[in-house]
Length: 333
Image (tube, rainbow, N blue to C red):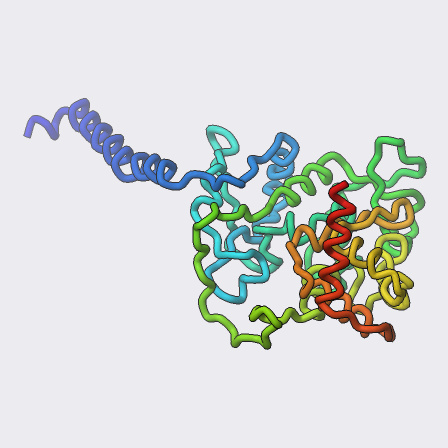
């Protein structure tokens, strides 16, 4: 029993056992995991500004409400085109030697999943307004306002990023809302969150608990719901009532673009976005980002043309297809 009486041998053996067990149980499986799960070919690493934005995301507790993992259930299909895979997180590294905040998958779903928010909501203008006060663009939002990430200046510098905040949300303060560097870094991080495509020939896992099939289009695909598409991709800026936000986002109600006969302009804006500065924020290329076909574009147009008192002629996917081809040729020149 001399071994148990010799503290050097006893603690030495315990240390060797602990280190060996750590290598066997924790380190070796982690190394194998990294070897087996490589980043997807189309995955884009975070740039320096996005890395700083990730730190702001962590520091402000955003991970407490927002996840970054699409679950394998049909209700999560809104947030990504497929369920999340281990490869989606394989390229993430530690913050530093002491902190492991590589993945921010979160535990709560109080707010929307952010896995693919860079594609879902790529507008910097919208994100800045939403960050300043979420109730400006989403009246029912319970997200706190991150006003400390902004300054108020009476005379902005030419290099300042001015946020188009409606006057009634300034609470009597005079001047323009200016985004700080932390706010800009955070938005760059959010815009970088895009679900990478799987390699050609790789089949994405199917979503479970699928809902019943909707009516089909002529080519056998499910006919898109214009109202659902508008709600998911357009409503956050143009609002549920189609009236937009004065000074931030234009109205679609009684809009000459929506109700007029220039379908080429209308389709071009949906596909490629539009820059209406300084009156309004820049609209991102929603249709191109979401890879909408003529069916989705036609469905959104018909919804907007028949809502909020609008009463314009409905369009067909066939005529939208011809316009889309022309717009794409014009854009490619």
